[in-house]
Length: 94
Image 1 (cartoon, rainbow, N blue to C red):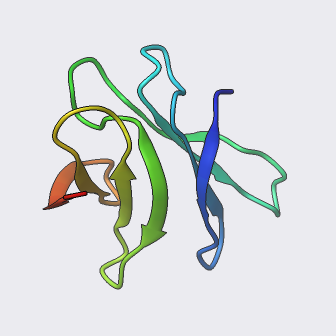
Image 2: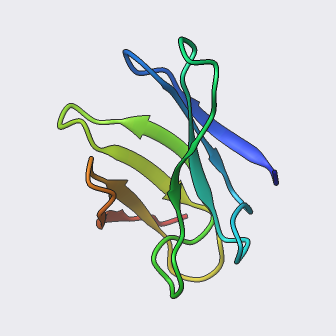
Image 3: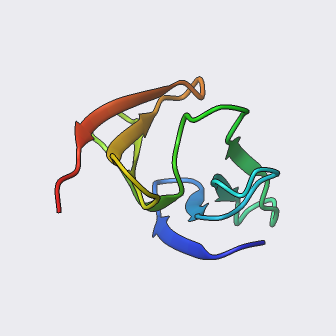
């Protein structure tokens, strides 16, 4: 596994991002289930630019997971809903 960055602790599973994980090295989200004692990949970046090296992660009041991109060029806070769909939430400026 590549660099593990952000971690959140929602009610059931612990989610963490692997900034350079996946077949293309552009990010994955993992979920650790303490009851089952396993850590399946919760989201894996498909082909094409969808999420650029996710870094920090949190859960919003809407239940979606939000991650800051940490790649190059234009970056966003990107959300993932329960169905695994990604959406741009906000552009980051720094």
